Image (cartoon, rainbow, N blue to C red; front, side, top):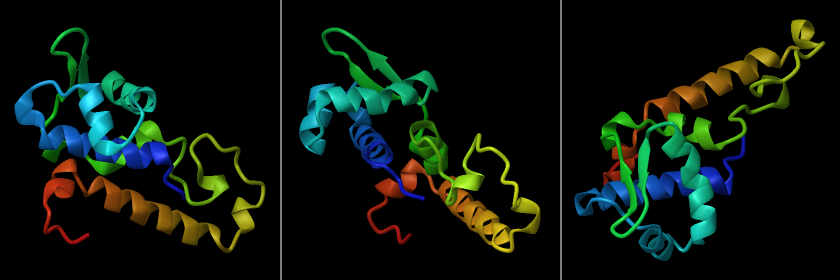
Length: 138
């Protein structure tokens, strides 16, 4: 599994929004400046998070983005599933993959299934709040 730039940026942007949530809506420009990410790319990263009601986007003067959930309610697994095409470690376990004709006889399939489960359980057990805790040891 390779987490793309989009996945990494999504977690950074949500952390930024959580850290600045006392300011109300956070402008796209201020997030882009702090994170060193273009506004255009930022919008693409945030779009699925708005669609899935993790964020609210507001237009106009005083507009920007704000979290709709508390940081403790947002799991990292949920976020990554929204922005990544797949979190599978091998192609045969990616979501929507055609069944492998060798799966019944594959000696490594249980290994990959267990690894995928461990990774997803780990990500689902971590929240945005965990990223904000500076002394958190992952």
